Each structure stands twice: as structure tokens, then as C-alpha cells.
Image (cartoon, helix red, strand yellow):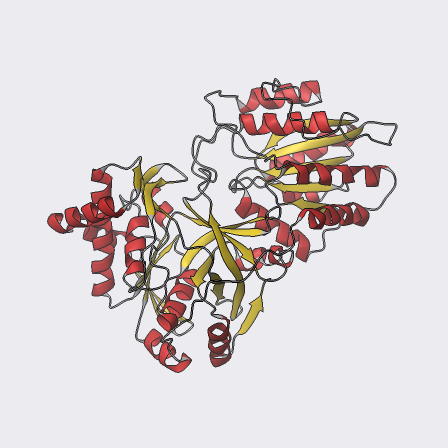
Length: 524
């Protein structure tokens, strides 16, 4: 059975204060009425313990109805999701008592722990519902067993980074679930009986690990469509070209010089320069580009032609700034610029167009990822897809998700894959792209990490595109080559972004690292 932890959005608005107070008053998850089907997925678990196992379920989120941009998206209603999970746990574990609570920041977690001194709580389940809420680190400091659960396409970024930190620190009281199957959550919850019966924390975590490994599929058919990298540059020639190139970074209104990254010149320019270039973009050329995007898109959803022209003007503005500075790559702190009223269009469609032309446009002012994209696109002639990855053990997949993606993953002269034009996902504004990337091919995912002179690297077979409305628009699903469990371990060090290329770039990655005296870290 493949029941998912999922939901249907509705218009019901459940206030945060009312939710918390009623949950604390009832003590057993009855704050939300059981409007969704009873949540049963199998025979209820029969406990062998005479006492009630008391578990506090903590939903780590900003608000019941999300009131600011973050994954899953602005306006997202968590009420049905929480109701479904609460009902499922209650029905599957009639001998357990689940006390449901919301928490956003460290002080919320501290209050929960202080209240629970006298509440005889046996353990905690922390659901990471979006990325900005941070409570699990505080809960993990308790002496109680903790199950940490990713609400996928919601809290995945915070989950990956916090969980890998626990793994690195050998936090012996925290087990985790990163799965879209509710059965995997249920299997992990059974482990709370172990410490109640006198077992150790390490036994608790080990049992969760065993249940996760048991439910993770064995590797599928990893044969990939033949895809030879032709006409790649030598490392020496690539490095020579990189030294003659430049990255422009736009993070604020300051003009700054900076030291090169991996030999690539780096220059900071202000928002105002790009904004001015956007303002003076040629109107006829703007209309022509907007028409091209409109005609080539398989579907346009929620984006007006005026917004397409706005994005086209920003693309022309970025291109003129690149030419002015003799640069090949640009990265913009787009959310800061857009919400701070420094820029007036999202660069998503413009970044996509730059990538298809052999240039680089990278999100969120991420210089390491920009350097990764520039270095290996220069070497191979193929663009990189910067993403916020998600891991789903139930499918043995890593999903690369972002609102910017090329549509020519095999290079400027390669085939173009279909795409939709949609709003930017987190706030449902502007224009971005859902690119339906080719499947069946080997991908190489990497990231330059200048701080420690390393290149982090893994490979996977592209197997699907996920159209889920939560989180970023483009979602390339891939099956990792290697150990998916190891893939959970590096996110606290190298942060969330990764850059995915089509093709087997392992040889090129090692040659580049050897040439500059860096180390390759294979994360799977």
C-alpha cells in the first residue's frame, strides 16, 4: 500500500493560538476534528506495554496558514496535513497518547521542554514542515528519544542540514524518517516502545535505521541512455578560460572587489545597476523575447504577458551588465532584491535563457554554486541545474528542485525539452519555469566549496519529473548511484544547493581537483 503523507488544500483557517491551546487542553490530538477519513493504513499496532506511551508531536512551522514565502508556498494551509497525521497516529497506535503542539523558534522549544518536566513525556516526534522554523536542535538536547520527520517539499532543506548535523555529531537519541510513505513513519514510531521497556537510546535509533533500510527499495535498473561527452576542454585550457572570465555577484547596493574563487575573477555590483539596465531595455526586443517564451511554452499558468515582458526586460538587463563587465556568470540575491524593492522582476526566466546560450545565471547570490556552474559548463559545454535537493527513501530517490532550470541540458546545440511557465513557487509571484528534464540519463551533481578547497560529488540516473505543486517548480527525480544513506551526511557542511549536469563528469571532476590541489568528497 502506498498511502502518502499528503493533503488537499482547503480554505479553512485554523489559528495558531486556538490550535495550540486546544491541543494542550485535550492532551490527545483531538483539537482537529476527524474530518478526513479515519487515517487507517493497516491493523492498529498492539502495544505490549501496560502503560500509555506519551509522545509529544511537534509541528515545526511558521504558522498554520503560511504567512510568508517559504517552502511549501505562501498561503499554504497545514491544517489538513496535521489533521491527517494526527488521525493516522491516533488510529494506528491506540495504546499511545499523542500530544500535538506547534513551534517555530528555539524559545518555543524551550517552553515545551520546561512544561514537559512534569508531564511524563516518553519521547518527541518533530515534523519539519517548512524551512525557516528551527526547533529540533533544542528538542534534541532533551534526554528523551526524538524522531525527526521531513515533510517533503516543505521542510526538506532545514531537515537535511539539521539531520546531517545530528549524524555528524553522533546524536544518539535522534532517529529520522525522510519518506513520502506514511507506512515508514508508522514503522519508526513503533520504536518508541524500546526505551520505555528499558532499552537504550542507541537501540531506539538503530531500530529506526533498520525500519528505514528495510523499506528502502533495492537499486533499480541503473543502465543509462548512452551519452558521450564530446569536445570537452582539457583542464589547463578550461582554467585558462576561467581566468579570462568573471562572476558578477549582486547581493546589495555595494560595489566591492573580491578575491577569485577557484581562479575565477569575482566582482560585486549593486542591485541598482541591474535595475537600471532593466528599466532601459529595448521595448521591441522585450516583446519579441516574451513572444518567443509564450509560443514555445507547453503551458502558461498564472503569468500574464506583461509579466513575461517584465522578465524579458530583466533578462536583457542582466545580459547588458554581463557584457559591460566582460563576465560570463551572474548570481543575484533575488529574494532579497525583490522583497526589498531593489529589483522589480524575478530573474528565473532570464537565468534559463542565459543557460541555454552558454552563459550562467545562478540563484540566491550563491557564489560557490555559480563557480561550479561556470567551471564545468566551460569544460563540457553543458549547463548546470542549480537546485534544492530532497531525499525520499521510499522511492530511493533524490529530487533536485528549483524554479530555475535550463531546457537545453545537453548544450547550446542540443535538443530542447518541454517546459511550462508558472509563477515563482514560494510566493506565487513573477514568472519562473517548470522544465521537464530528460530521463534515462546519467547525471553528475557537484558543488565547489571554496572554504575547504573541496568539490562534493555524487551521480544518479534521471528517472522522472515530479509535478507536485509544493515547493519549487522543476523537480528532477533521480536514483543515486551508491549509498543513499551516506547521501544524508554532508548537508550541514556544504549547505543545501547542489548543481546537476547531464553526463558522466567524474573524470573531469577529479582532473580539475587534482590540477588545483583540491579534494573530491563523494557524498554517496
